[in-house]
Image (cartoon, rainbow, N blue to C red; front, top):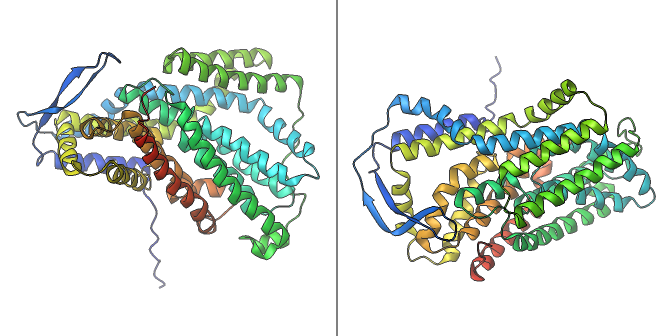
Length: 463
């Protein structure tokens, strides 16, 4: 009887979070309870840690009941973030169901005939925009279509996948208008949502340029010499007219929908930056947009709700991951050991240069992303620890948020937990993608650390 070969697969994020919660439960019996003094910050009106005053308190012991109740309590504590994710994704799902995005893509294919490299660049830009908006899983339905579009222009599958994944990668990490990393992180640490956008734009330009250079170089080289393709066997027999699905006509209603979507992005950015909007304002804006779309396309109330539910269902997993990640914080706070852990970490890093400290934090978040893919989930779990740690070490909160974002976002399409799904949607095996991506995304990761150091050196501030 032939023995089955052991094949390692990364456990589901829920399993990983449950294990982390169990580790917190066990560690709580050995770590003394303590609290930093909290003082009122006059600028933000929030209570912040006074890193100079730490007090030991009576030991708080967790019970098994605390462990299992924390799943529910974590969801309740994270419901604001979860609600925003579900509502916005539901509205985007409704917009997608109108065919506006598909019609726009088919229009691009026709417009770029004879200028195929421009189609590759346009697709790269399109997924860069998706990444800037923090779509993440929300852009999954377009991965296969965009890959097929680029293949239909005479390029190999790797070029199609690279346009999609490299475009999404750096732009998601920079977090310019990303509610699910920037918005969540800044809300947790008390910064105005999307503050510091100017520096994130610089980060975006750097990542965009790196990704574009690698993409265009590979696209031209593999098309000129197919033996250079990572998918040579498929590419040499590839039909240049690969199907991109039934053409969706660009009607005036779909044009209006796309214009409305652009207006939504502009209003959202302006509202968050100039009007200090938060999650309730943003979700209200999205719901109004969906109602207007339903009227425009004459979709009845029941069907509108069904489409909205289908869109929201796509991110139910990440939404629950946010709640379970918050459960980790529930246990840490219940045992009164979160401040103790920050106190120990701060003492261990005390005296080290900011460059070393930020490198350690950056590497830690990058490594954690191998196991916990959800950016918003990790933000809920990590920022309550990183925020007081930054205060203790004299590192600006905006720099801590940036370090978290860049450690989280760049490896979403490199580590297996996130990349395997993305690759399968593009019809690509993970091994070949990793060999291609390690060069481009690896370059972005080095650039990211340099940008973090520069941000700290210039005093990248809260506003």
